[in-house]
Image (cartoon, rainbow, N blue to C red; front, side, top):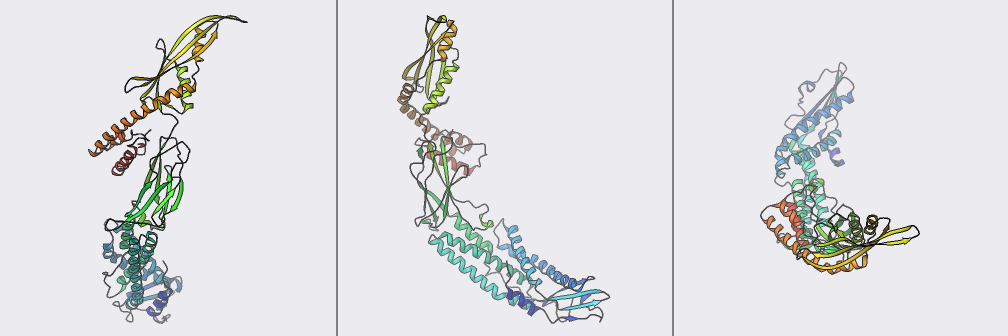
Length: 520
């Protein structure tokens, strides 16, 4: 904060009498009493400096002595000043204003001249004096101009808010905030030094301006307009743009569109997608990609407000809009249960089936309502003559069924086979099992026929999970509610409602980092 040059010059002119030296005339009384008849205590503050080094050092010490006295008076004034702070902010407020005022004191006193000096037996003495009345009079006009500027700035900001012009309103209040700090610092200084301290009734404090700014920002609302709940293939563009609207809630509860504010769209990792300026309707839109390896994707939009003082932005609840989308896989989750005819595991066949399913876009999930149940059966063996002599040719089949576990209905049945040739029947059968070829086309056709059944089962389970989660939420059992609501998968009718309810619970109860709310 810079002190106007006219203030320093005025103080030097009004507060400082002609420089008088009493070198060689004995030690003056003021050197020991810190009083001077020409500068009575009722109207002046005196600072005395003593140095064995030089007169310049004595003058500097006189100014420092005067500065210390002023700062002591300032601290006593802060008891009244901090009453203008909001509850819980008194300490911060007091420190802020004290620092501002002490900076003003340092700049002011540095520009002063001492009024009298003396030297006695190689010791240098200096006296600095401040005329408290003239000092207060010199600051009066600056304070009045500052109060008017702050008042007008706040009035202009109120008008701009009613018009939805939030960016210039915040800029106005930021300027008013800085100016109010300057005014209050000067007011504190005047009260600390003036014989008749002015009252504080007309004070527009920084705390008041800060409160107004917070009031505006906490009434901003970013709403989702369109683009929520879309479905797209991995790494593909979402079919529609994401559109958000920024409004401010007025005292009558009506909303006004906010123009000219940047809205930042970002991924769950914090990567910026785009920053868009709201138009005259408060709208901001962006295109986005379906990214990530989870079933559910999320994009968050927030107002990107700049230039807000840290004291205001600290702990400020900034509004946001969260868009969800589902990443569409070609297939859907299926369950696998394979075994040999004698009940032994068939790991190689199971691995082969899993690999084929993955190529088709399906994933293996032990919780899926669709079961691929298969039995590996040795079909036949026979001798085959060749150049290497007699060999055993074996054939094995995989009988596979697609079953709806909810009803127990077998939806499709199909068979795959493989052949193996070796010296012994056992080795030939082992090779035949290993060579079972699972063809993609018939498997894909069978699974497509089960897709509608899978979707119906999934929607019914999603509905049940949502209803149970909602009841748990209403009963205040938040952790259990979160677990149930997270079971509602993307692409089902209740998905968006479940996600919004999850966010509501998260706001009521902070979630530990390891707790994931996205369905897996």
